[in-house]
Length: 457
Ligand code: AMP
Image 1 (tube, rainbow, N blue to C red):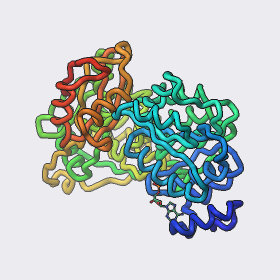
Image 2: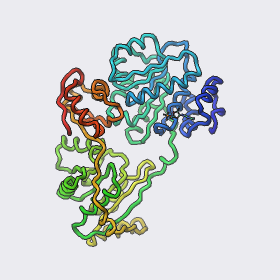
Image 3: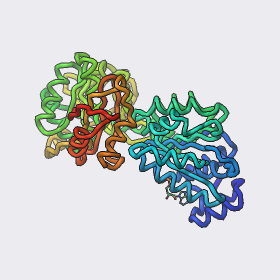
Image 4: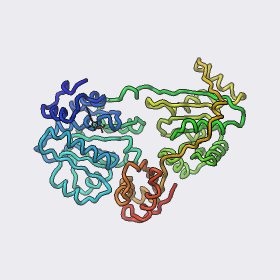
């Protein structure tokens, strides 16, 4: 499909698109619109700016029955900013029809006026999961007539800890609905969500994501004892926001991470000796970008659901080729370019020879002298983690934390990163520049009407 005229659209929608200056469909629209207009489920890979809102907005508005004052479509978004933006775009698209009522229901603002607007009836609702749940619980929002459910930025919703809320909401929607899901990235959790709640979805992925992986690999020969210096040089050169450095022993993990921290990098060690609580905290801080280097053993890193990393370093070559391939597979995922670097001393070169014979291909060696001459430039993470002394068992939900930060504390939603909820505590990543304000406001404010202890993790 290369033109809107090829689609079975109403004349008024066609005229409206022209007025909006939508001359030709964007790639995600070209792939998602035909099945979505047929009423099929779609799972699409799409970033902000890809035109994804119209990809679901056009079909939703085309099938809307304005005469029926019931909620016919619900769009779930991770943040208020996105919800407002989506509502605005939907209003533009809805000019193709008379009297379409669209409301947005987000946390961080008082619920009373929202209840008022809902009581006047609405066709389309856009909102954040926590607040939508509140309305469902109060009975002020009903989904019994819902025909389309949209999950926008589904990966970000999962990142922010909204999984349970999203599943709860889906569970209250009619089974014969159409479900459209949009996600910028494609982690396993997204595929699981789709399998669980979509029916024979049409898979719309922009081609590059189909590339299995795009990993470039470099090996450096080092003298024994040069690993730390080489690692710092590598980090200084590439400035990765996230990197795993693999070591073979726990002791080496501790030494390497301590040395990196001493030199101004932000590193955390992950190995089998950590208590579960410490392990959680390490993974949270690495996963939410408030620590940039994870120094890990293979065993500790097994089973980590860590997304595509720009850089993976083997501080020591892996035990065998199998492990090597597994390690470097953490970079270059989902069509992104990744770099895997392996350090090797002459005494370890047999491991590289084995790798070469297994692959039937010679590895590429980098220039060690050049690498070691790199001036030191520590990588500083963009986020900082706050730890709140309240969790699931205290009935804290991600929406409460987001609400406390963006509502009373007055921070814009886009400075808030991942929210990780545990039984007795909750971690929230905040952009570093806003962290001090966030901490102060949370300390002085309330979460779920209660004062909770807050500290930097
Ligand atoms: P979105 O990714 O949905 O946030 O859309 C990004 C921007 O692209 C919005 O400002 C839309 O108004 C605009 N847009 C969406 N579809 C088209 C199109 N087919 N042609 C031109 N602009 C578009």
